[in-house]
Length: 124
Image 1: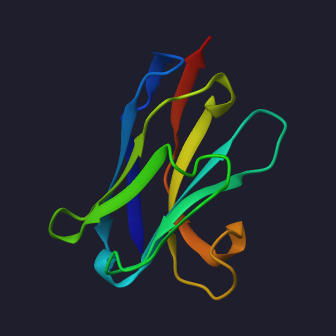
Image 2: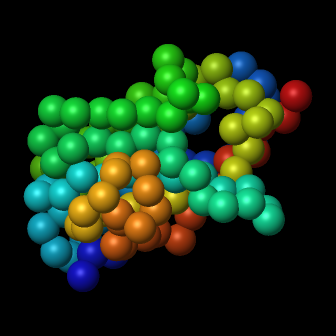
């Protein structure tokens, strides 16, 4: 079992920045890739970014590429999502998740453990 807790969400004006954190406890967190997804009401959860267990690989959704940066500190069992130049369309609940299953990194089903989410609201 892995327990995940997201933090760092909030209200920010367009063009501003936020840094989300995902703190993990339980099973060996550092052995797994971790992803960030986001979801708006009535829509499916969609991929934002992912990072491999050793930070050797990172991937981003086209919509956030160049603005968001994912990183991790395995000594602290924490993954971060630095979000810059935020836009109103980035408004969503953001979830972190641990990837323990096979399948593409951008698919929800590849991730077994999920946090409770943190709200990000970007005003225009």
